[in-house]
Image 1 (cartoon, rainbow, N blue to C red):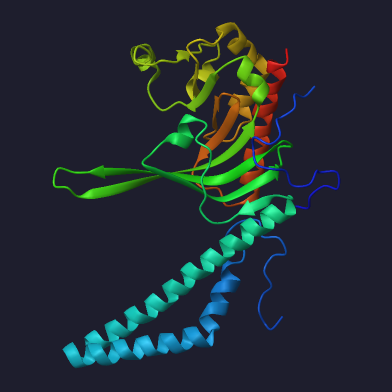
Image 2 (image 1 turned 90 degrees about the vertical axis):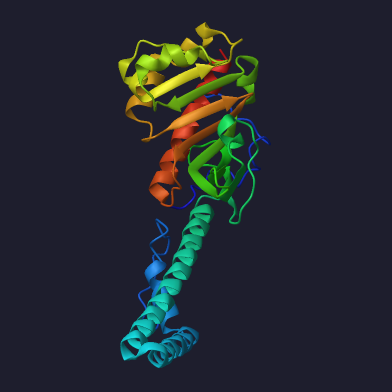
Length: 306
């Protein structure tokens, strides 16, 4: 997708500008603009397998495995070692090709949409609860600018890690991956401190018992569809009447029928973090998530201006 002519040039990261309220050689050529991180993998994979370096290294490993295995335990073991070496070479080539295809996609995605991209690991501002979770946290493929949703912000692949230790001292690390979109909506900060529209993961009959231990207020709305999909909380000192206006009937319909699957958002002190579980690596889902984040940002700004 090409950037429309009237789209503004790439913008600074979130925080710099607020969201406004609305009223050739036998090879099969890769796609001109890859639509996901798999599109150019086959081209890279075939190129790597035909590379003199790969062929030379692969032949050395296969012959070495055959000779060593045969000398140590007979021809059967030698053949097995040679096969294992060949599989290793192919597997490494596949991993490298996947990484290059991933870079192709995200580079093309950012360029086509006029976004500034940071491909390596970086940090995100710890502005909402999700962005403060875990023992370690980082983001990759962070892209800043005027997002497909129409507002300046950032989108990236976010991961946080939780380390655990068992009774024998063995440590393990769990990885929690999300695709996030960040916007600044500073006008909302004067109307509310926090709004968390979370994916519902527990049983509704436990809500009252769980709320005893929360510092947040639960927003109860007369929508069965919304209640099945989300749990909504807001700051202890925030106005419940304003919150109910924020979640207008039309916004509730959008959240329950048009928002992406697994969609959620957090707002703290004017900083908005829209998120879904998993790392998205295709243009259609990234565009849709950016568009959804834009809807939420504009709804917040609109109600804050009332």
